[in-house]
Image 1: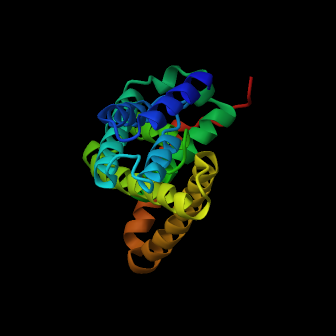
Image 2 (image 1 turned 120 degrees about the horizontal axis):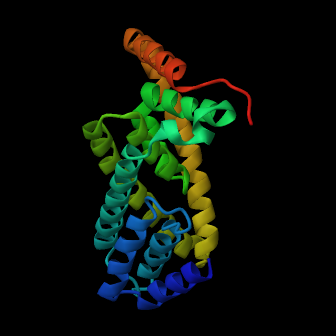
Image 3 (image 1 turned 180 degrees about the vertical axis):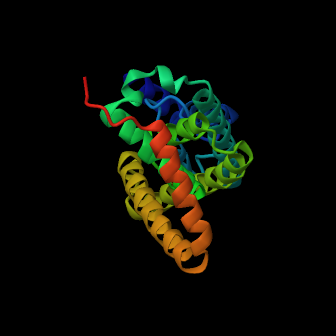
Length: 227
């Protein structure tokens, strides 16, 4: 964490320098598959700096952060494709198997919403994106949803940073906490709305997804006792 704080301080000090954008892209990319590097704080802090004309152009920051997040998520998906789940004891029995099955069910029944909501949650997005690759979630669908998610996440982080600069007089850490909590709440709300819409207007499609999820759970989760 000390290393990350040092990197964060350097990026903020770089401000409007092109190197700050390069570092932002790299951090957003690595954050897609390496949890100790929450990139939200970097994007939020740089966005806050733009209010005092010390940061990069907002449109450029948005594009760079979104691109880095997208590439990082794609890497996480590819890593998930190569994980031999059947050889991971924790994910192949007991509580771990049940958790893996629940994740698979959510991806199969509410894949786009689940993927989009997870982008706003550090570590959670890594688990979901790797899980999507591990269960064979369609790559094309994942890529389209992920592109939209990355753009929304970048815009959301920038909006938080600009708002904090105006309302809270700085404080990137507080802004990051608010941004993460807000993202989780938004994701939960969207998930509930989409589920209600699916059940009301597309009952047959929703029922088919539920049956597919249950079948997937039966073949992938082994309800054996913990060792």
